[in-house]
Amino acid sequence: MTQHSHQTAPTQFVDARGIRFAYRRFGKSDGVPLVFNMHFTGTMDHWDPLVTDGLAATREVILFDNAGISSSSGEVPTTFEEMGANAIAFIEALGLKQVDVLGFSIGGFVAQEIVLQATELVLRLVLVGTGPRGGQSMATLTPEAQRIFGATYEVPEELWLKVHFTDSEASQAAGREFLKRFLRRAENRDPEVNEKVAPAQLEAIGKWGVPREGSYDYLKTIRQPTLVINGDNDVIIYSINSWILQQNIPDAQLILYPDANHGSLYQYPGRFVRHVSMFLSE
Amino acid sequence: MTQHSHQTAPTQFVDARGIRFAYRRFGKSDGVPLVFNMHFTGTMDHWDPLVTDGLAATREVILFDNAGISSSSGEVPTTFEEMGANAIAFIEALGLKQVDVLGFSIGGFVAQEIVLQATELVLRLVLVGTGPRGGQSMATLTPEAQRIFGATYEVPEELWLKVHFTDSEASQAAGREFLKRFLRRAENRDPEVNEKVAPAQLEAIGKWGVPREGSYDYLKTIRQPTLVINGDNDVIIYSINSWILQQNIPDAQLILYPDANHGSLYQYPGRFVRHVSMFLSE
View: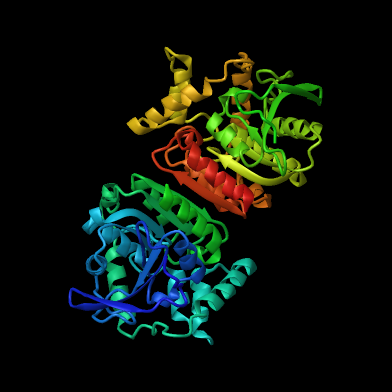
């Protein structure tokens, strides 16, 4: 058991594949660690401390910046295959033989690639607010995502109120609480990503999202117990894509939360931690 | 705390609306009791002891036969509105002011009617393997249900292997374990239903299932926190109807289990008890 938490865990570094990966580890140090994969343009400091510390109560959690993101060196690749290969190199550089993997949004695409490329490395898989290759309305940003990411905000962080929460009063109130939490870490905060990140990630999204004949067949090869979680009204990666993941991954459970958009894990952090902890302990 | 369990709880009786209702109560007696509503042609002895005793560890559970079923007197009405009214009369005859309600399959239709007709009586709602009025392929039995209920079985109980479980080896093995459990109560077992039950319930199903313009509007009036659970491959009431319930009930969570048919709660009793207990305790 380390004494560190989301707020105090030092940023450490490990080299692999010519990249210097920034990461943080904290929580209960026995058992299988849980590796978090972040969303579009996000850094280690975009995770919700209630989620990371909540899960760290019963297992070790590992946050990291993939290649080209924030405190890590290198370039963001323009395919999720390459991002997955980088993530695998990072995990193996830590000397880990088996991990649980959580991916949120495009981090869920990376998580799927980790499983596909290094299946023996992954014990359990948690996919949050994400979708399959060639899923519905995934080849480009959805109209809602284009509008939300295209707008300007007086307070830049308020972008995330629109990305992660619905327009309901209750959801927006939960969003404002989340913003306070995710801004709370002041020392050694991960810098925001540079201007090359979004174009590279968007190019990768475009390739991942193109529907093809048999787009979902690869999901049937995922043998890991999988938990798919989303809001019931995700306008960034439509919720139906979570249904499609569940229907095609052989051992997948689906959980949807009410009145919730892309950031269901930030709207219901307590419920999310209980569901994920239960799943990882089964 | 009573010392009774699923196997030992005596069948008791209470009179309301001219009906003598048979019921059993057991479990931890403080807090809000959970009232179970049974599936097509089922009795109190069709529940899985792992589910009822599992939930009884943290709350009181109440099983009952609705009017015309097994040990209860009266006739099975040919509408779910009337079955709901009978269920409400039963609950009120026990002197209860507030209950949690669980409904499985057509018991889920009754559970919805209880909420619609006596909303102040219900704190939380659990809907398992069920669907909305006018849901998809609900006006008649599905082709799969017609084939399953129309077939003959050497051992009559093996009908339930087909109704509740998928054809996979793992699911059928879980089904055979369930059959052992649900047949274990030998003393004071509820008699099987008489020959008038199925036709009356089928007539009611026909009326409930007819799609109409705005079929799902009534779901938006359900204010109770609701948990919708199903197998991912329910061929009796298609799983998409669980999605529809979640998308229309304002405060509903959805949980789907893998490789599971209509009887997901009997295939994964431990997981089901944990999810429902967590939900009822939120």
